Image 1: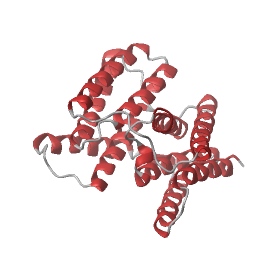
Image 2: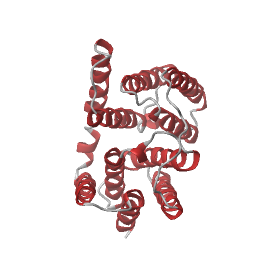
Image 3: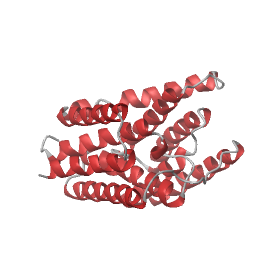
Image 4: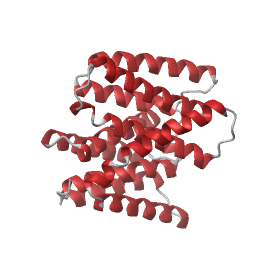
Length: 262
């Protein structure tokens, strides 16, 4: 029953954003649902194996942009960079509680990943996405009790804000157009409901299949709050395909946990 509830909440979350359906949008949603179901059926080892390829791809993108910073990046490639940057960082972060690294090694690893993701987003002109991600990361570290690490992430976030200012990118905008008040409440309500469910899961059992949805929906909820409530000029809600690409694996992993296959 919980698996069905998670699926329904995820569909309501997507419906609240898309509102009016066209053939293309229906096909996109079906593809996202299929991806979520496929991830739900994957064995645990297959999901864990995604960690290193995503991190390596993220670093490879950093190297590419370092040598070719003016390379033309189409919109679909920009969304792919954001996707890889998020999941590459997330897969490393979710195991941080059980690694037992000392403080210096932990901060060094997180700093390298943070700067790699930030550099990739900076070159693609998407650095503003790092703000909601960084706020979610700070909240996540606070819950884990990594208070000293938070200071470093907060400092890096301030540097990112300065770089956004240097790029002359407006942080605040007019908000999403065409969203009714009901849609806004549905977006906020379903995202925070999924966040609460994922938090209850890590209280019950802390592993990859519970930590990934929690951190992921923490990021999604933070992004929705900033875009809908604070009227950020950029975020997942401005990119339908990216929004669905981020949410589908999180929902699939969460349903896998509830299905007793983790």
